[in-house]
Length: 201
Image (cartoon, rainbow, N blue to C red):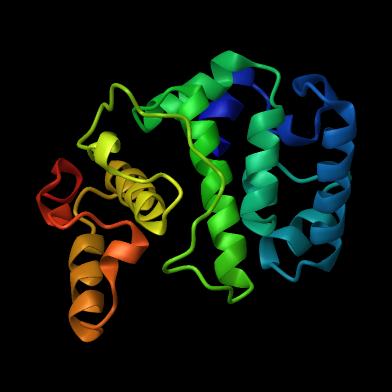
């Protein structure tokens, strides 16, 4: 979002420019949240910017360091320019509808975890847009319940692999299951042969 949208719009302050967004009410709410977070931030780069420049807001890469994942999700989905959204989604080999639905799901998952709510065997009503032609290895969606946590873990793995191909996420997941062998992975939505799906190879 920082690099691709700033380049597409040729504007390093695009997040706080109302002409870049569809719904002004949503823009106003996000801007008020940004103001609040900046005023509370003790980050050195935020303090330095405030002491040196008269701009009401810092550039987008500074803002995105201090706002929540949920706000970033709202900003992306409220963006007026489909071409800018497409650049971000395409970076992950996804269409805009799929990427948009995925970040909504991850925001929701983060909030569930952040409130220490039950997650492992929960049926979450939010349904993602189906990934019909994945650019990278994915799962068999016909045998996967998108309401279960397994689907969301797959989303994390897919996105992580695009930015960090040599990540150790799969091994950490296997180690976690080995440490807690009594956990019912089926209740989490894991298929019996999940490790053989292309995503996990």
